[in-house]
Length: 141
Image (cartoon, rainbow, N blue to C red; front, side, top):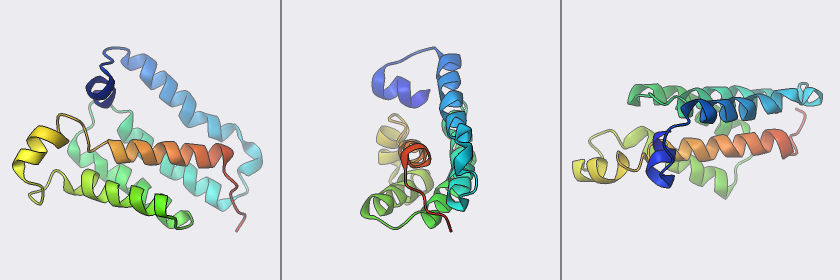
């Protein structure tokens, strides 16, 4: 919700956003024919781990460790590509390192926190996981 408010000016509708997010989360689970694919099952685990954090309107900094677990499992599961490498790098930089002293205080206070940059890589990765789960050509291992 903070991201939607900051970037798009959308206020309220917390329950609507959560309902849409819940439907999107559960939709890939309807693809019963993919249950036998191990990679698909790992993607669903990653999806749930990230979803818990990005759809929590009161998520605090320490809860992002749950999302990062999903990010790392996703990265290790999927074939290496430039897109996946870039998304992982963005997640490591903005989600993991932005609240630390590695980032100058001015950058944290004036860019990372106001623009909720910490959540953006996780949102992008969750969207990619969702797309790969529903439309991707997952390989049986």
